[in-house]
Length: 257
Image 1 (cartoon, one colour):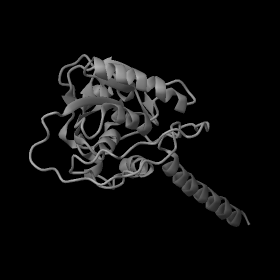
Image 2: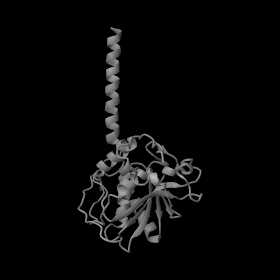
Image 3: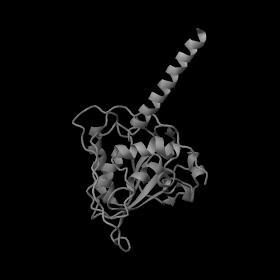
Image 4: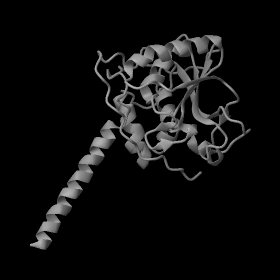
């Protein structure tokens, strides 16, 4: 009888763990944000060198593997590079940044064609791809290197970022804690961080965190090799519904270089 009871209890525990895992995978993408799903658009192949009018934008949304995977799938974005910004140490390594002692943030630096996608549209995606209401944390990734931050390159970007932050607040129940700071030296991250999702799509973090995020953002197709039409758009207002809190995520593990 005891053995039968233990088997029953074990069965329920396994069921609860499996159900919890599926719920976690589905819910991790921050829900404290507008809920309408973006729509995809066609793209056209790149031909020749990038346009001469490319502009630069730099964003920190927590893990740079996630933000790179999102930004490089947007029409008008020609490059999205993982790196570090905002710290005091020159040429920091990933391990040094992870100590939290260098003050750097993990960021994605974006080269974009403003004729195809505006800086304001990139800001809309920024608010939609992460939870800007958690200080120095995204899920279980904690530390100042995971802070929500916009590094502006000029006064126009600063003004746009400040207006966008104010406008975005209506979509969040909790106060936005995103930092808006002048851009400093950008240090490109180690090679093994670049295109991490595209190169390691079957890895646990990619399957549990990045893939569901791309799915919810309707960006599951491969990165565009195009300047594109710029008509992909992030979610807009959720009609006044109170957003749900963000579930925790497993912490990002350090890959072997």
